[in-house]
Amino acid sequence: MDDPALMPLQVRDRLARMARVDPGGLARLFSLSSLEGDLPARLLHALHAALAHRTIAHARANVPWYREHPEYSRWALPEGYPGRPSELLAGLPVLDRTLVAAAPARFAAEDTALGALGHTSGSTGTPLPVRRSVEEAEFTAAYFAHLSEPLARGGRRPISLNLPNAYHGTPLRLPAPGLSLSSGVTDDLLLAETARAVTARYDLPGYGTHVEYLSGLVNHVLLLTGHLLEQGSDPGAVGLRGVSVAGGTAAPHWRRFLRAAWGCPVTDRFTLTEVVGGASRCRRCDLFHLDPHVFGEVLEPGSSAPVAEGPGRLVLTAFHPFVQMQPMVRYDTGDLVMRFDNGCGPALAFEFLGKHGRAVSLEHRGRRRWLLFPAELNAVLAELPDVRAVEWASNVRSVHDRTLGGLPYARVRLDASCRPPELLVEVELRYGPHFHSARAEEVGARVAGRLRASAGTALAELEAGGAVRLRVACVPPGSLPEPALKL
Ligand SMILES: [Zn+2]
Image 1 (cartoon, protein in one colour):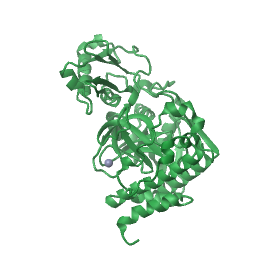
Image 2 (spheres, helix red, strand yellow):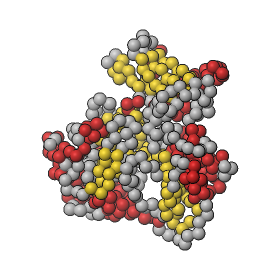
Image 3 (cartoon, helix red, strand yellow):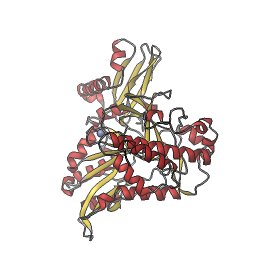
Image 4 (spheres, helix red, strand yellow):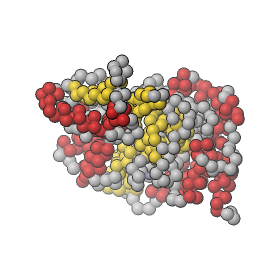
């Protein structure tokens, strides 16, 4: 290669046209693209372009829905790419869950064999069946095995403990760089066994002597942590090197709590059943970055205009050969995110704002203005001991996982029949607010203050102009339907 600046373009053209993609080779290219600098960033765009070409060529040849859409037959790799990532898929239709769920068979490729069936949780609407082929499971397993190879080399391999959840059908098994143990927290026997497994010392040749990594849904990891503390165990004495939490937005308060309790870094992980991959919170900028093999866009709600900075809907594309049986090109995740152009690496950087359908906005003088993002409400409520946010499972005897897909302690409504429209936020306290009225007022004022100060919303401005009124009402235990607020 004479000119290194041309390398990304050469990689793009070769990868777009090769007959079969080698998972190890692709893992090495994506690892290179994660390095600092301009050349890796251009390499990442080139890899995305090549994989977009392969994905679309496969989908329009083998998948009925894509075959019948004229935008797909017209799509071609942009000349001179790497250009702007927002141009790569511009013009192609944006899919949403309702569209795919209405006719899932039309999104299934005819050239692959069914290996597994998953589904979305259904907490935010119709569950979407997700078909996975034998070939894509093999490719994905080999790809991640190559990615984690440097971690596995030399020394003792780590032991990790995973708290899987059974909410999404056939689990996708990804290789961990050591020994992966599985357990759970959803009944008291299982919880006692998990507490034993995480605090035990192991004597396994070639492996570490204790659990070094813990991962699971944030509520499950909180439950385990609370249980250990209640039993008089010090989680910090386990010697974990990392905790990874998934499942919606983990409020900053809970991330700080877990970091202090375990004495190690806590990584937020966002994953989606429909797309193999997701996003992780970055230790440098504290925002989420997408995995390099997933292509992300942030678009205006209600249009397909790209958002360079600010709130918008997160639209993801899963590339062939990671996803083969049910290609998802420009899939609207239903999540609202705040996009930042912060210069930290080439991958899309964003913060979660919550489910699009649960955010509140108002049409004001012909423009959509945001009033409330569920993640901000979640963040302030997590800081208030007056709200029973997590002890729903302490002293566990039987656990009803009330938090799946929602928060059981807040409800939000916009009443447009009032003048001005009223944004009512009801917060369920662990006590009757009348018993401690001064404290209840403090809680209400704190929640209101945070919502008015929430970046990306126009609540304070519109309230000052008399266009909307915020009312935070504290209500007694048990007075809200469950789950009341979905993130
Ligand atoms: Zn970052």
